[in-house]
Image (cartoon, rainbow, N blue to C red; front, top):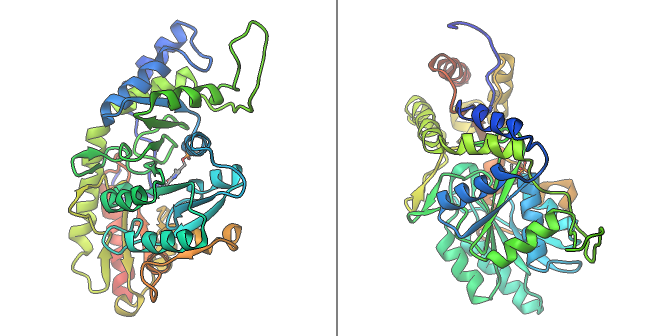
Length: 384
Ligand SMILES: *Cc1c(COP(=O)(O)O)cnc(C)c1O
């Protein structure tokens, strides 16, 4: 409704209409419990979609990262390199395994992991005689990191890459699906992601044997025996058949969702790209971003107003916006951890956090809602 003041969310769920069919099937066959035909089909369909050998559906993206770390044998005393500019869930599973994160800065070109920072971190680790057990590369706000140089560095030290593609399902890197380039990849179907099962995740790999092991751990590590027998610690991480049905319905329209998020970005871009002091998150030439969230930086000196001021002004209009992720090396939780900056002089992720803002980017945003956001931001900029 024009002129209404309904809340505009940052990235709300957007149902396709196919979900209820799949959920009804689950009810009709009484496959309500975890596992079941929708889980198998969702795994198959997602693996096919991203062009990888196999997938394991789990209860969250966080659980998928945890399983990937376990598959790589990560344990107490190990170091794991991880992008700093990300959501805390990228690194929490490192702590679950008793290992120690080392954070890597972003590069300005893609806002993703800086190859030069990674290189310096590796050299320092090599000199100290202790290489990391794995590198978690995060694909931020729908855009793949520059995987080729990052993987080349990791290969030189023979260290495996886990791709945290929670935010980049549907994006590409050099023609390949984002999330399918590392030894393991993970996706999230949390409520705010580009497709959602209300909560859920997926672990993907070309190593089917490893995925079988992950499936075993995720199902309480139950040994094949008549009685309940367990030799290893397990988790209750599997996705329910009902939620997998929602996922199948969501996956059908992933392409449309990507196109719509990109068109939301274009609306913001044409409204603000000429404003002195505003810079949108760049789209690197090596791939196609989903623009899961439209992110931009506001230079307070040139705009006369700061990103947090705009977040607050939007909140007053019942519009949800957020600062860019607070880098993990700045989080109290990780204050003891090492951190490698893009250049010796500059931490890029600090600057992006201080000046960055994410605008509402849902694929179901209406034209009126887009106008409300744009008007409100415009007013803030004019006042400054
Ligand atoms: C959402 C997200 C996760 C966690 O996914 P959940 O399904 O919520 O556990 C991990 N990493 C990144 C970068 C995310 O944005």
